[in-house]
Image (cartoon, rainbow over all chains, first blue to last red; front, side, top):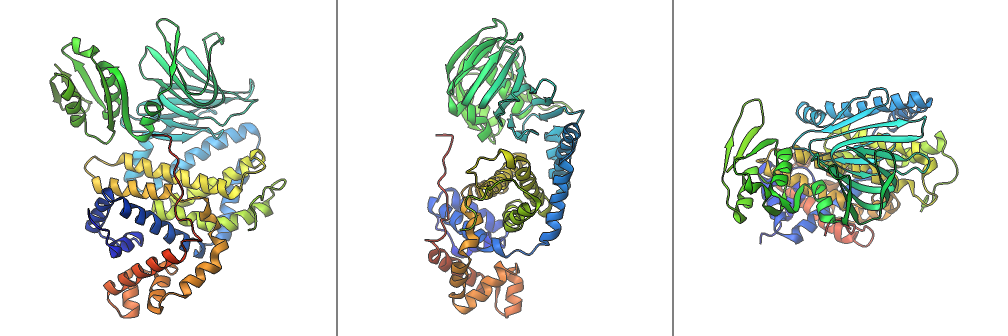
Length: 332
Length: 192
């Protein structure tokens, strides 16, 4: 085990380290818990010691922030539009941060202010998190689309989801949030929940905290979920199956892992194709239905994932690089 | 301790400005350190203050506004770091590792970050008690934000010497202030 070099630590903390030094430093942390802890403690110390001695023009900063607040205080419709603009402005700030990063971020999260309708989408192969105007936090898994609007007349917040998202809802008794997913609607009653609806066959809602109802198209309550429950709604049968929630599966994607428990190869490939932005084709139809469990970090390369799957079953694959469209992987 | 339960009645511009003046610089400092971008850090901190104004009425009686501000800034920075890490290509392993450890270190900084001011006397004393050269180098680096090279030039010593002084200063301060500054928070994780 490598010991941590004190000089190197202070160079990292003070921002003086070269690329090579960074490499050696962070690699040491990887397999030395004590060094890792040293780093955290020293960095924390450095920040706390310096935090009070800054000299910005605080008066100007205050006026700028105050300006933002004043603009926010208008009539409610104006406020909505303002807010949309504010969000656009925040994304613009991100944009200005540097051409490459800004470009990528903007490609990843698109927010179109359009008469109070907010639309967010994350591209294949990326996660994003957004905060809705009401303060609700939403994490969007890869290839997900979410629209949101506030229906002031009927006093409700309406969202529509395609893909997978994790919600931490800012609950308001008088202004419920309804998330429409295919044929069902999830109504929050003070809640943290995850909805997975990539496939056209089902909507999987997992409730982590609070209460949520699942409503039919007509608005009848199909089921009232309690924390720790997962409801799987099948579009085909129109029925709901309840099961206990597997927290590691629900949280895995936000932690950039794939965790799939005993799922069909076909479904596994569906998720892989969204993350890696590739297309899959099965030459051998039988293989589609074999089941697997899989837990890998999302930064793992696709080839490595394929190799891991191949450890437990026999299939071959061929990757075809294509210009202008996703690469195609044939399973046979 | 000044405002542990500072939420008294409604918020007006004057009170808001007090809160702003008291916390802006520390929050900006934290954001800039982690995001390495002044504009982005400013955006994050402004957003936190605007939000505080917006939700003041809804804040629970016992919610500490400082903790709220800190949490907003910390979480937004964490999200940005995570997003940056996600945007990296697979072969940029070092950058990704660096972001990972920066993320984890920020994750371990607790609410006491904004309460450090109240320990100013103690901190100042510890710095004053450092061996002289150590103290000079430390102050130039930390408070005047000079690069090691610049410090070396100014003092007419080698960069290696500057590094050694800084390392020593950090080590002494760390053990000196240990009982006053909880350096890390315990992490409660959703996973595991």
